Length: 506
Image 1: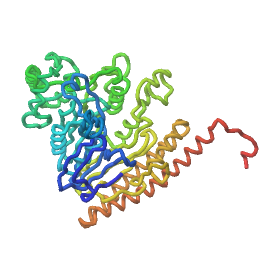
Image 2 (image 1 turned 60 degrees about the horizontal axis):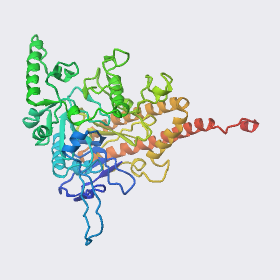
Image 3 (image 1 turned 30 degrees about the horizontal axis):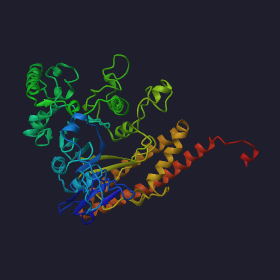
Image 4 (image 1 turned 180 degrees about the vertical axis):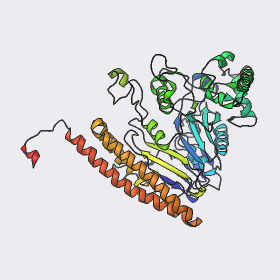
């Protein structure tokens, strides 16, 4: 974890991967982030908040297809060939922006989620990108999701206020209104030439009669209908308007146009969307021969209205899951060995960090933003509540070394996960107890510190929040060390070279 202060932010940025150099504005804001702890790979700032209470998360690699990449190739870095002065010397080809760069060159300069979309969109059009990515922006009023399309194109969609979005590593937006993107931009934004580029390259695959299909009549459209006695007439009128939009090319399915439906998606991506929505809308019928959606369905909705309000704990659970309660659980007893290894878990062994960015509208802006953080494999870690409006984070989180050390929260979590994985059921109760305790301590810390901060002088708030973070991390280290001791003992007792004799009783 890191806080980048204005004086520490570069004025000229050079991408480590792409060698791209660009000048940055001279008025950056302070921002929190979760950068790569090992030097040499670029910042990879991941996710955080800036002083204007705008959040950004840029750790989502997504998919594309051959048609898109042929129409607008990615801007890859190509090393120089030969030496300057040689007859056959070919200079290097500078690459575009990527996940390594996005947060650093965008977050310090934006004052709203929309501004984030606009700034990143302009940079993508100017410099391009060398990979397909999804980026989230949030403020107190809106959440926007941006997806890169080929080398220089992009689309962005506002997340409905009453909905959540599930995003495995696959291009996700499944309904887009180009007319809105080209006009008022109420819920859609896009690169300026998107319509012409799509037409030129025949990328719109949406059939006019697709509106008659049940999956196209999703909840988002119904939500726009007026709740009145004339609701049915309103929906019919809206249906005709959408049909007209389909015919004109104003409305299309980006997932079909720009994304993928590959065999690997059915192992790596679609099962995760299926399980997350199965958790948050459990009564929609996800199992059995008559299920509307299966783990390999290509048309699982990008956004959905949940059955109840979604909590921080819900987010942690779905992002830690390994298909619990299904035949696909890699730790489970249901199904067969084949089903239990069929799909990529969400809480996978190589999870590095999880940031849940919460903006709370019910407290003053000075301490509204909370960055809940977890490190290591999500199935075995806990979310820690941290106030984002601070000048630094505690050393337990901010001084991660390349050397394995239990003095770092990151490495402590890596060790716990590796040990607990080997004795999953024996250590499960200890892990769950730890997760519940750390979560409860976080909510308690926020409640108590909110009260204290509300009564503090304006200039004292940031220091008060930093003190709360430090006290939280002191307790966090104690509890994490305790858990490590417990899982180490349990796993050590099950070692194959164990042998019971009388000396074991001393």
